[in-house]
Length: 435
Image 1 (cartoon, rainbow, N blue to C red):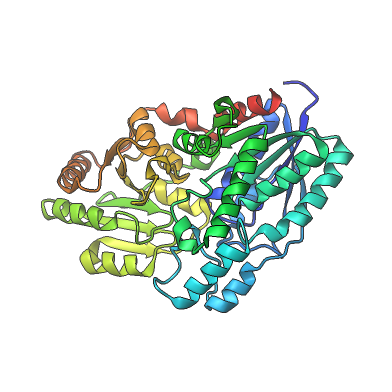
Image 2 (image 1 turned 180 degrees about the horizontal axis):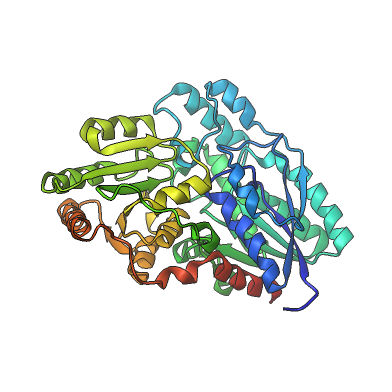
């Protein structure tokens, strides 16, 4: 590795102490990119002014003490949303922490969807741009990276690209106007058109666009005939090998633990899984089987699960990322449920890669031809079932239960998942930055 590192600038709204999957992508890139001759300067919002759904202090261990981090003020209308709706928390993606059909939530979503375009965190942009201008001039930076959501951050990229003419890489971790909960934002037609215009401008003006799945790439290519397909690069999320280096072991071998980590709302195929599970458990009495749900689960989903399988479920609210990893390491099977929504073939949730790193077999309900199913198959890490395949799913669960009964372990022996390590993905990102 050379002695002189290329200085780049990153604009990211989410940064520790913010929690959630979105934080990890660039936190981990910043951790490993210096090994590949790239030094990242970070501009983010100060936590005192930010609107985070969750916080997670455990992420701070991954921040290199040599990293340049500039934290700014922000104007956050989501604080007013909390007052209007009466909620203590900012909404999660998919609104899993909101009660269904609450008129206050509908009104607040309408305000957010029509008065804050593309999103309610746009108030950070002015502060972010000012800080970015200063560091670009001070360090003579010629490469800018903006990561979203919030997609409003990409508009700061447009402004800085136009002023400085620097190379601009727009990293879009999620779809924009095609995100599965977009219809819940109660947009009017003019708001939709403006949002689509912003999306198109970003895709056309960025020098490179990075996405997490091939499906999302194809989705964005349809937005404009001015986009060269070679300009959109797929770099998925991944897992950090250091996070899984712990020797945490399962204590009770006489219980099978199925782990579900993350958000769970009413458009996930929960009922199909519960139906299959009930069939499988009727024919298995060797050990107790418990499904551990960790994260933000909608109240109506909790009520349904506890009513249907009261002796086989437990629920825990948000935990630190470190605790989340420990839960996976102490489990036997990982459950992946993909929302039953339009364009779900492209949903490639970050937790999939940590599921892979735990080496537990993955039971997935979602599109068999989707990007998540392809990676599960590629890594020989489990099976994917369409939601109508309840009997096939129950048979597979039964096979896993019986195998555990005979062997007291379900850990996979292959290492096909290693291509998705954060370090390897950082190498790929560095090649894009340095090209």
